[in-house]
Amino acid sequence: MKDSSDGRVLCLSKHASWNCLVGFGLSRKPELEAQLDREEELAVRLGREFDRDTRSSQLFGFQELPFDDSGRFVMPDHLRILGKIEDGLYFQGGGRFFTLWNPVELAQMGDDWAGAKAACASFLADAKAKGK
Image (cartoon, rainbow, N blue to C red; front, side, top):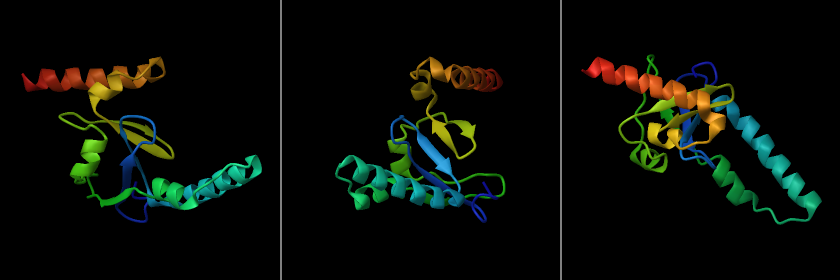
């Protein structure tokens, strides 16, 4: 995250279709601008309406959060509520973005998420065993 954010800034938002949050670095901003251009171009070619302001607000509506050298950050309440984050938190992914899940929400995902669900369940079992 440090390398992709010119410092210690985490961009965090509600994922567009999953019940989780999505995180990424500031370096993704140009990619989002290019996505906005592509979506507008496609809409024009197909003769569909496209509200650039609304779509821009959706893509760039993320919260920029500082994080410390250990990667810790304070999650705003509104994001915690949007992501249905309660007692547990599971981080999944890499590359362009990662996701932050409430383990209960992740467990409800389909078979495409089998690896993430197994890893999350294993981490939860380890944490429970250490708590005893």
